[in-house]
Each structure stands twice: as structure tokens, then as C-alpha cells.
Length: 296
Image (tube, rainbow, N blue to C red; front, side, top):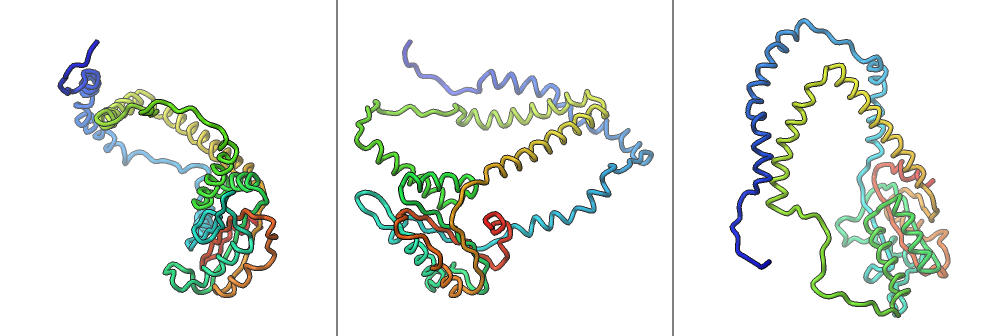
């Protein structure tokens, strides 16, 4: 076996799929037009009864408005030991005391140079994760970010975990693999990816046409089973979400103008002994109902 020069060509395996699918798909427009004729003729003579639960469901449509009210806009501010000019960096690691974290939050609430600083009457929720050791801090952040994946907290969690692993393994000398490195992944780069997308779309039409062999009753039965399965999956997703709500952290609920909120940030803080701290402020001119109920 040896290297040899070749010319790019359309793969016969892809061409065979395209040709086989095209034998049916080419006749699809005419067949569909022919099928629509009797359907349009019968449309005026057919009546349908609404679902038995349609009226009851219509009476609950305002629940969508209630859900939308939980979705609010505002500003988010996060401080961590790894932020420049916030945490204290030493040879042994990065540190941030609770009082220093709260002070930076308060200062940023009144930072007139920040164009995104919240103003007016605010609803504010503060979250504060603090620990005496790096291991406790990394574990607390990992637990919290599973429930509240705030991007800055996720970054802090990754850095804390990496710093912890570095402290545990820095005395080890790992073996070095030869370069270059193997890169795992699927071999689906262009032109295979766009070819698979185009051919897959054609095959989807064939699958749809094949499903027409079912009677309308069979289709509706399958659709009802699919709906029941989907509802079961959503119910299980909610149960899993509720089961993951564990752990504890310091929280603060406040309202008022930025100066009033800034003053309230200094009360009830843990001691300096907890040298690892990350804090978040969620601010909005709308009620933060969901998050305040999540952390009552």
C-alpha cells in the first residue's frame, strides 16, 4: 500500500441513495395534486366534533400569561475570587472574603461610569456562596450551578475545580504523548455533512409517504400515544428538576433605588474565615417572583 493521487468525485453510495429516492419523489407533486381533489370535494360534507377536553383546556389558557410573567428582564452582576481587581491572588490561590464581595457589589450598584448600571426602583435578589476551603467552595458551586447555571458562576466553578485538581496533582509528573494529538469526533465534515442533510431531507419525504399506508384511525391512535408519551416525559423532567433542588446558600432580597439596595448588602455577612466567596445580584424593575420563591 502506498500514497497515490486521486480526483474528487461524487460517491456512488450517495448517488445510489439519491437515485433510488428520486424514483418516487419525482412523482410526488402530481400525486399530491391528484389526492387533494377528492379531499377538497369532501371537505364541505364532513364535520368534526371538538375534543372532549377542548372547552376545559380553553378555560386554562390564561396560565400561559402567568408563565410569561415569571420571565423577566434585568441586569446580573457577579463577583468571584478570579475577577481582576476583586479577588486577592496569592501563590497559594485566589481568595475573596464575603465582606469584600458585598462591598464590590455595593460599589457597582452606584458606579455611574457603567452604562448598564440598573437605575430606578429595583427588585433585587442576592446570592452568596462562601466556604472556608477550596474543596468546599468547588463542591458548593458545582451543586448550585446544576440548579442555577449562571454563566459567571459556571466559569468560577470550573476554575475552582481546576485549581483544586492542580493543588492535588502538581507534584506529579505526567507522561507526555507524542505530537500531534488524536482528535476524537465524527467524520462528517463537508461535503458529507451537506450531502447527508440533502439526502436525509429526501429520505424524510419517503418515510412520510410510507406512513400514508396507515389508516387515519391508526395515525390518530399513534398520535395520541405520542402525545401521552411526550406529556409523561415533561412530567418526569419536572420531577427531576424538583429532585435536584438541594443545598443551601446565603441570599438577600431587597427593593428600592440602587443606593438603598447597596446599603442593605452589608448586613448579616459571614465572617472573614470564609475566604472563598462568589456572589451574584439579579436586579430588575419587575418582580423576581420565581427566583425569590426558589430561594425563600
